[in-house]
Length: 113
Length: 115
Image 1: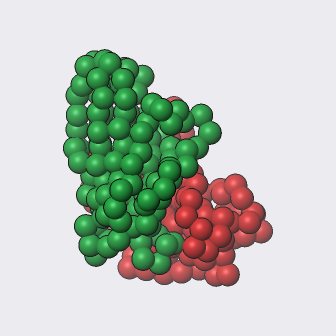
Image 2 (image 1 turned 90 degrees about the vertical axis):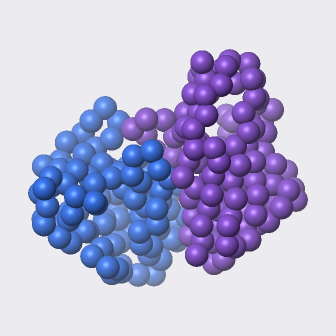
């Protein structure tokens, strides 16, 4: 299930389940969104991105959905594996090509074998 | 491709000393690099944007004299924490814009502990 820790919400799933991680972004003018995965003690790793003119994009085992009406972004991970355990951040950019990213608060995904 | 190397990965220093952290883009040129700070169980907070050959742009509340940034080449940016104090202890992460300037690629981070 999902719980909210001191600073970081946590999603606990069983291996093989599908995981859905949600993100509410702040700027309705944001044009570009990225999901990053951060393992403990490491830097963020790019997972998948989507532009504001799309509402869905699929990668390998991952799908990003964008709902601009409610400023909501989600990351779906199919057949979650223990190696998927990490903190997942969504990030938004104001304009395509404009450099500065604004990161969301993050969600910790814990996958039990 | 798009590998960003950050060094050192972990540093312990005495209060009052200065620490330099290096960020290198290994297989691409990065005109823009970014420095972030991250506290445990929190998100990344942008400290400054580093542009090659020009002064860094600092975010509100970040002391530019405390956190010196130099971006002297297209593959190297450095962050120097001057006169470090225990409250500067944190995880510092750099990133660089990829060729398309839409995806930032991140270094592995530097854990700074100030005693």
